[in-house]
Length: 271
Image 1 (tube, rainbow, N blue to C red):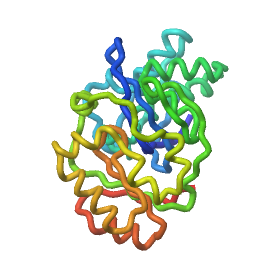
Image 2 (image 1 turned 90 degrees about the horizontal axis):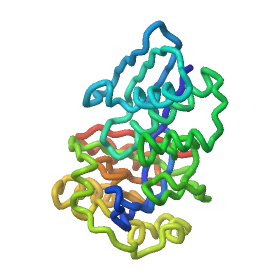
Image 3 (image 1 turned 90 degrees about the vertical axis):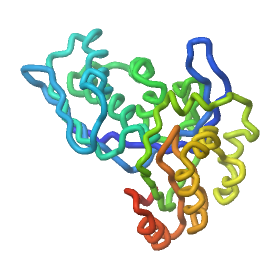
């Protein structure tokens, strides 16, 4: 069973409350982007996972694909499998690569072994693996609330725009990102803001993590400013970082901007 787990960007990200369980309540819009890892799961004599591509930190037992397999195995008595994961999406970059891998592991196992698990049950399993995992069960824009698991589809399209992702050599842990957050009510209503023309997003669509993270890592703020200076109609940090993305209307300008950075970049035309 072969699949291609996709990444996401966040359009707006507001941290509105600190919950009694230690998690935070957020509001954001998850938008799927055509940037993929490669995941294959096949029956095997022994359960194991093979990793290639970009480095994934931590022991194998902490890999979200492995956790997803063990989660289903506990309830569905799955036979042994070999999991092959080739990483192209950087880890800890705010693009949801690990969460997407975990969710696509659930989806692949469901199809491979004909478990016939309904969507609601798959969503429940995904939510156990990570706050944004449930989003990756459906490749469409979703307004997310709660921990990120309460999802509602929204009508928004970035089709025709050129997306530039910039990957600075900075790793920001989730704990570090939330340590500088003071939850508050958003100044602008997210769903209303995203209905505006994209050129108006710059002053109304924000990411709460940027304020303190840019103070700690001025390079990230400089990258965002550079994207605007070079013609992006909108630029922001995705998730808790450290990827900075820009939306362009002109392919040549997008390519020229990417070439101006010494960091790794990725370009895609959105559909």
